[in-house]
Length: 473
Image 1 (cartoon, one colour):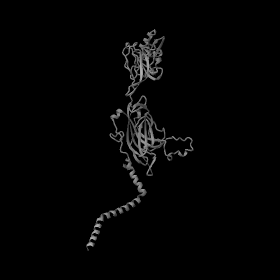
Image 2 (cartoon, helix red, strand yellow; image 1 turned 60 degrees about the horizontal axis):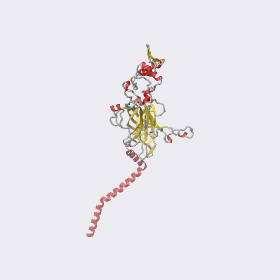
Image 3 (cartoon, rainbow, N blue to C red; image 1 turned 180 degrees about the vertical axis):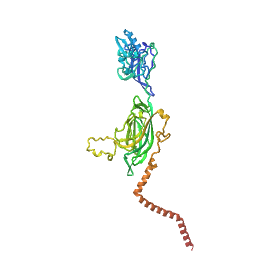
Image 4 (spheres, one colour; image 1 turned 90 degrees about the horizontal axis):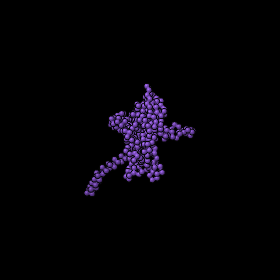
């Protein structure tokens, strides 16, 4: 928003230039447009300030002209040599007689419409505004003007959207400028508590047994970095335990119903913001030590409307569109079991794989349930998060909800320990007896060698003394 003091007709042309700003080497002009202010001031269509649709005294869009509608109408009639408007008032209505016609308020605004808005001004002013809109004066609007290159004035290089208001000082006090700054989004904190999994399809084998190193990876749409839980190593039954809390701070625009995601395109440029759909993506992954991790299943949770999770793990059969649709911005917190879906499922796990050649409607992109995940989603504002903070992982303050240590063996907290015990069992089953025999033989040989080395000085001394005695005797 720019406010410029000018003197018409000495200064009649407004020039607007669009410049590409450089960080180190100044700016480069892209295009420009020119506007004749004197023409707008003198035209009979009154192009100084556009007429809004409603005459509001309060609210987000109040009346921003220097003159009220009745005064504007009187000045227009005087300028165009018409009779001044005549006010008509009855017991339950009011109107104006102008240009040879009579306009009543109830004819243009029914009683139902009058009860809806508490920001409207006086009734006679609303009738005058209706007449001004009908006689062809410039309405309130956003102009779209072409931009022309300074090098080649005939070449159009873009469009400029703007609006221009002209306030003559002779008409009275200039109203305050309208605030057109971008609306600031609301700050929220999304709290995700991951509890456990059930019936996860295990995609790899460890020492001949199906097993997986499961963890959960989450990120909001548009984020560049994902949050992860700890790893439940060597989960053999598909029932992993986490009890892990993840926190996501984001900005939500309630007018656009989107979240603001920051993205940096160049090294020395500031991160730009873009609006994306508010979707939380949750992936159940299998950790691999020496190659890329495998995504077993995925859950997409649109925060504005997603299917409620199942309340318990007794019935794990997933039926799409069975549960009601919830909005996290309305319910604030929800807990349940959600299915992890994927198109990449082993052939033996697909119920319809045998019908692939017979079924003409077979869909290779069909999604299958690869596991169930229990979690709790809660949404709080930034102020509420500051008053009642919670800790990441299982840190303090551990509340809402309280997260105990996961129900898993101590051997399954680390990759080495989870493999060591299983490796010992595997090798003992394969060659335990042979290893024990070899160990006994090696121990006996080592004992004999140690005994010989221990008695070797005595044997050498005895042999030496016998040789000396025989030589002297």
